[in-house]
Image (cartoon, rainbow, N blue to C red; front, side, top):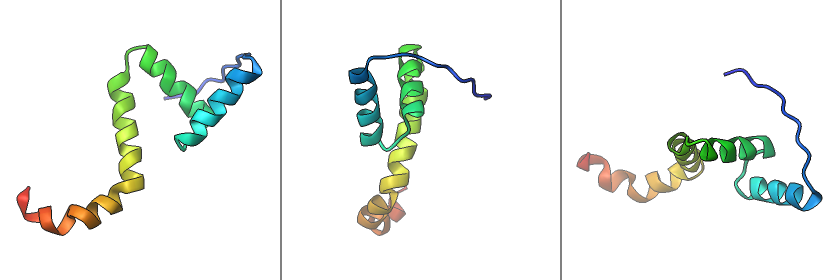
Length: 75
């Protein structure tokens, strides 16, 4: 999907909160705002899948180490 630039003006507290929340989630402010709008527009399922994929990128090795060999035959 093509990207379009959108400029918005917010007060400094809102900008700071957006930066902090994006950083805490390990994403850019752009992506954080995109996800908020998607959620508000009813695309929560898509956002959830993206968040789950990001989670697995970060913690997939931990799950594989913890459960991989034990659970391998239980599929």
